[in-house]
Length: 375
Ligand SMILES: [Fe+2]
Ligand SMILES: [Fe+2]
Image (tube, rainbow, N blue to C red):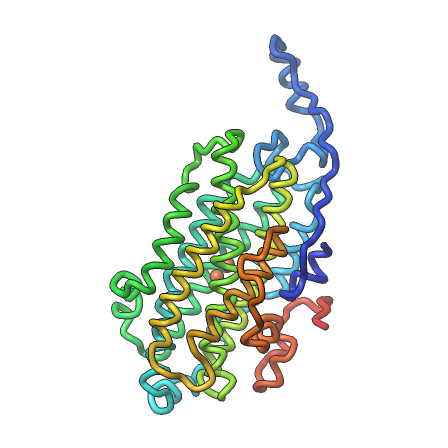
């Protein structure tokens, strides 16, 4: 997969994984003297010796790269810099107060309530559970950028909440009192807690399998499906000319999330290849089943009353359609065969290619790098 060309857009599929053969490390013999140990530790790093996890190379030395695509992701992410204060939210205040129906306000507030907590979870997963287990610096460097981006997303939600003068205590506590929101967060927390430990022995096959499943959940489902599809209710308002500032904020977040998902899926595939790891199909099927059930409860709570142009059924069909795409990208069987694209405009939102069809914004100033090809 060409990371720069393909991962900006969420339409790549089933990338082959090619990993060079691992060379023999110049490890010192068991009865080595101090001088021999020093000589062995001073040996140059070889790219082929790097590993996703369980590597023995020098984690402080960036090159030679074994995973040049990871460095590409880092460069790409850095062309995508923005802050929430740059986006005009004035019309959103008017829309929220005077134009949204009670059902639309309910949808808007609860989507925001879910997102506020979930981005902190995403930050903690990558920063505290995943990054430290990576044994190639080019992987950690992109993940460090991802940690920053997740905190930027949290800032964005807070900025929207402050700008619209929403009750912070109410919004931030909803996931603790609304079962349908809590269900998604609790599911993610359970996955996170299984791997949030610096002493995990990833040479143990069961532990490695658990770690891979957790990473799959966060990259492929939490970010790849729940986030990817999770902004859609707000985009549905945007398509009717409502809450356009918030929607624009979310489009910028979504572009980050497309990269997070693509990077995570690439890491999982490389990990499975390097470690000769096959995921238990039943365990993967359970992940999809749990994710669909939690999403279904959430969608029917958020969309309990009719909203023009959007519904829980549309949301769930799109979830299943995107889930199939993630499974293909992971090299796994589709969990929901036959699911159809219920929101064909969603990929356009993710890719920002057609954004100017919806409204005029500062999009031409959006990227800070001049060399990125968007078409
Ligand atoms: Fe995020
Ligand atoms: Fe993310």
